Length: 448
Ligand SMILES: Cc1cc2nc3c(=O)[nH]c(=O)nc-3n(C[C@H](O)[C@H](O)[C@H](O)COP(=O)(O)OP(=O)(O)OC[C@H]3O[C@@H](n4cnc5c(N)ncnc54)[C@H](O)[C@@H]3O)c2cc1C
Image (cartoon, rainbow, N blue to C red):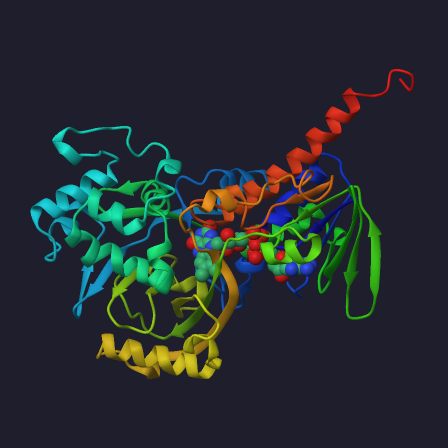
């Protein structure tokens, strides 16, 4: 049997791939629900993710998986409108002329930013088209130095800095230019007249999770089952699972750890130096819409980094007519005030923040607020990150038959995503399948 630790998208994808190749798998999930960071809430219509989610047009593996699972027709693409709140005004940033009319930039600022987003390096006056090809070349460059050199000081100060503040807070100066460049390249298709095209699954990503659970088989998945130990003697022997009722040990041929790297360390001793940030994220249900945009970056002293009105991306009639607004903030340190607050205090803090930004906002339209939090939700993509990535196959580091598909793996660089989780799960499954095929080819001639 192949044991899989963790029932997020990565663990499920690994289980699915192996099972399709004829392997016997058992997946153990510590929580009571499957889905990890992609877990969902009920609404009066479709389910919605506790943490906002969408797809980028460049993410093909998740679309192919949906197709294989028979839900390809539920993958939908819509324009997700973007805007920027600065000095009391909201500036739409979807079309070239909206960007060109942003009052905080000179013509030269716009030219430099435009060239960077088109992958053209115009430093020194001679355009170069291959400078940005390899993200790795920018792994050790501080993001600020890069942004100032490849755009302008003003673009950094009036744009990138607040995005970095919202995303990485006190760690922003540690982030590598490779992350920023990856974000710029990662952005998918743009509709020149309307803005960026983003993907979703009709009914929510829970539909994909359900289809995966169905394909893997409920009998092969155990929830409320925390893996607490791996027995490894040169190769992995067994895993130990704790449930409320009992502790059991299961013999395994291989094991895939599809969790955050701190769990990998506690199970195998393999240390990972990558720092993770946490998230606090509320879904606010409202009788009325608040914004004209899907995604609002807030360059202000607001108590949150972004406001994301999900129902300006997916129609509110899917949720019984309720308008759903995500309010989100990243946490670098569990001592931060926001992390220490109760859900009620977070709600009060954030709704007052909205009242300050939008004086016309009437709290009476809010019908429900649900707050989700998780201490490890995204890596800090700091300089030298690639040296800290955990390999898929930990045979030489930990013991034969131990694989890693969690968020510290290569597929989740330069940004973590559902697609990356699937790629990581597949990468581990494929290595197990290949290792068995290689073993079969090397059958002892006497035995054969
Ligand atoms: C705020 C936010 C916004 C995001 N936005 C997007 C987006 O727009 N688009 C996108 O594609 N992605 C987005 N993501 C990222 C995406 O959710 C993740 O990349 C993906 O869900 C990670 O999946 P995973 O399986 O690697 O990890 P997880 O989802 O963390 O799953 C790991 C699982 O392992 C379980 N586990 C831990 N320890 C044990 C143990 N000892 N035994 C058994 N089980 C254990 C955990 O309970 C968990 O369920 C977002 C994430 C957040 C937090």
